[in-house]
Image 1 (tube, helix red, strand yellow):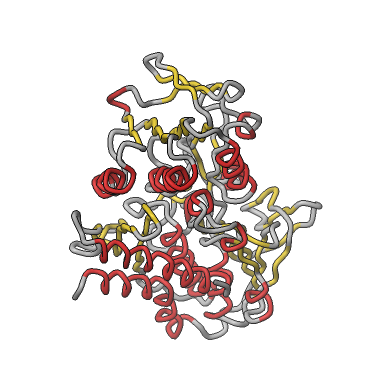
Image 2 (cartoon, one colour):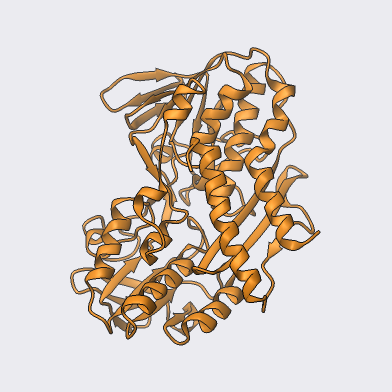
Length: 426
């Protein structure tokens, strides 16, 4: 099978494969399901819980009326998209599937009493709880970088106001300035994300501010799709992008947001016209408040169902969970949410959870007509999540311009498909 065709097939499996589980588990399980978080990990299980068992009472706790995706937010920085194009609402989940959307925040979880306390003080009772809280920032883990600093040196690792702030800073900077991007050590949300961002900022510079540069200061020596990115940087942007790994003093240890300056572990200082700090991360705060995370700040789960190993009848999916070798990607969150929904309905009906499998496809945009990707299929072996041998892989090196253009087009198709599957909107 042609490589791109196989990737297209994987994308389709990720969007619809969970439906194959439905006949074996649907049939009146009934009960109360509460889902916290309306992103690509939380909205799908809210929807699929109702598809698997329409009798189930499903409440989605998500304060936003529209959710803005991290996937494709880098394209907003590059000028290839606007914010409206990455925002999605919940009308279809409510009107078509019967999900109750409450626009409040989850403030506390009592796993013994099986209640979620939301802003305003109301307690929502549940039989099964699914959390998709995403990530939160480890404020202070990087010296000088706190919430106030993020208003001057944005992270933009949660799409929305921070994305718009970083875009405004790019537009306001003078030509000839340096965009400094601080990349964290693993694990963090969207491993290829910082390097795609470098591409999109360079694309903006190439179009509007040709004397400007991108400097990546990295706390790692290797990163996702590295050979493909570096080849693309050279082919498309020449010497506009410079990457400094940890072995060459790339690890930033201190941030001065007021001066737009960073310091590395060996004392080198870098001044930025625009400073973008992607800081250390952890599972969303509600997961920690509920006692569902380990000492590293991430949520351990049972691999087959994504039920928390620290509390019964609570499931944690997406970036917050510990699910290696699956990356912390939007596609994985979507796939994990469906598997957890199937496991929840089976549990409520007193049946064993179906045997799961997951898929991941991650596209990165180097330029408008230049895309690259990585794909994989995951399964359970000896009680652990493993990548299926021979599945997926990365785009080939030295591919033709036509091939790269096709992958850029497939990236758009992937986004539209996963958005439609998640929220019912493109």
